[in-house]
View 1: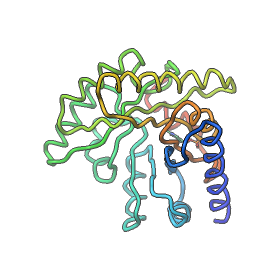
View 2: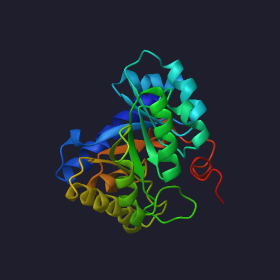
View 3: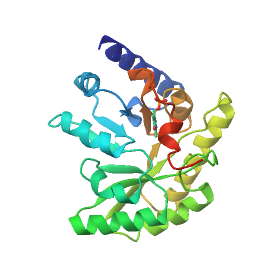
Length: 239
Ligand SMILES: *Cc1c(COP(=O)(O)O)cnc(C)c1O
């Protein structure tokens, strides 16, 4: 468990150094723990270090992990691809869905939330890398999807989310982040208060911080390598 404490301290240091370099305050960037496949006792160690924000890609795993960590002061966000038949289960534990990317999902979320008499924070996931294999609305469709979502009282748009290009080409990765920041500026210009920018992971968090992220999502650099490649989580039902 010592490795979690050590890795976490290292990430916090990387974050503060990157913020300093970018001329930003450290508290402008939140750290989300990407919890997929991580055993609950390892998550508990991170929570004991003061972490409060957890992300999960899998609906069932979210149910069991949130139950195992019940009573601890944490908030869960859903960050995976959401199938409409799983909405009911995700609403049991997630306070924010970061991966809203299509009209059908918006309508079904609204229906269920109306039924439960609840509202939900959401982010719109944008496919800034234009990869066929990734989910997310195309950048040129993002603003119209946001405008559509604003018609629903049950859905509170807090901002945007993206998964940067998986590449050694730092400039190409940055272009993804910059494109999300651009869209965020356009929301602001349109008078919408939705400043959250969820972007940056273990390998590209410095670039994301320089490009304006407000929330990085980190798994591997804290908890170690996972058995499955990320494509297992990002491309389900896609070729
Ligand atoms: C797994 C995952 C992360 C974290 O990725 P790491 O490279 O392990 O830090 C971030 N965002 C999403 C959507 C993920 O699925």
